[in-house]
Length: 276
Image 1 (tube, helix red, strand yellow):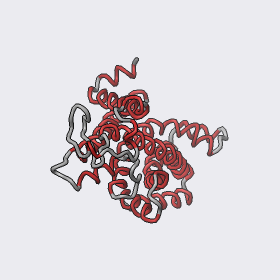
Image 2: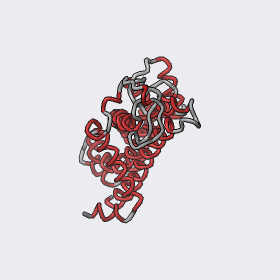
Image 3: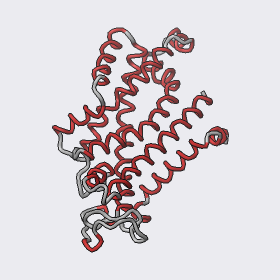
Image 4: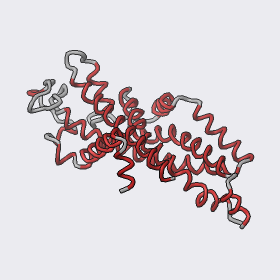
């Protein structure tokens, strides 16, 4: 209840929570709520090709007659799956490296953080494009490319917190009683890093969706006929402004997802800072 009261004080965070829940609900139950479940594949219906928004097709149809609204909902499945998998892999890797560098120090800190600096010196999208340029453009490889891009940010975040916490009294007390470095890192310091990690993960869901959509926009991500927001925007961009609905609605879908996760992340930051 206390958490809900804190969240309710920030109306924009409530909006973000509602948007995120709606997106997740729509993605999970897509086959039951979309008007044309079969349009997530290579269905062709030239009788309704390239039709503007109407009562039959709320967001219009694409060049082969597939319902854009249905494909957007299915594309959310791809985007959320990619975001969850990337963060589920990148966060532990970055957290472990950040903890080791921040607490152990010495040559371990120098080696690990110089490695992190190398990755951070390359713009994320450029690094992801470079990787996808030598890999087959599939969902799995897109996850791999984005994961390689993302773990250094968590390493840097956790490192900065662990480096500050290692001089605190509770850490020194644990060292005095003979606690191991592993125990101190994961049982003493890590809990103090979790609020920042959880907040960053929520905010990063939106950014991961942007990176993944950018790869698909360039033809390096999920390939047709699988629906993906980035590839849908790229396909429709060639027919602007006449067939504006082909790219405008997928673009708005990206905007809504990023907007929702960012607002929710701001609310979580406030809640976790108060709890701490």
